[in-house]
Length: 68
Image (cartoon, rainbow, N blue to C red; front, side):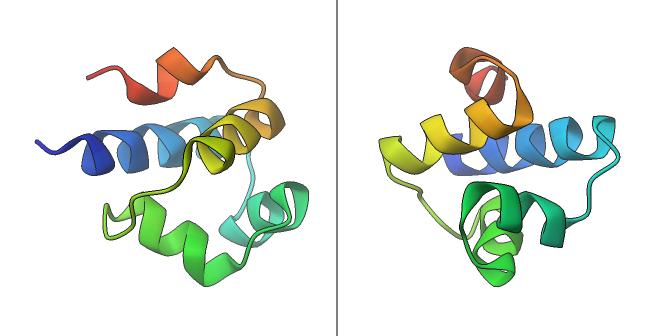
C-alpha cells in the first residue's frame, strides 16, 4: 500500500473517531472538503505542512497518521 493511501485511511479513521464529517475536518483545517476527500482516498500527496495541520486538528501525532 502506498504511503498516501495509508495516510488517507488513517485520516479517515481519526476523523470518524472524533465524529466529524469531511466538511468539519475541512473547516477546522482550513482546507477544501474535496481535498480532504482526495486525501482520504489516497489520490493526493499532501505537503508536510498539510500533514501536520491535519494531525493537529485531529489531535493525533503525525506518526499515527503515517503508520501502517
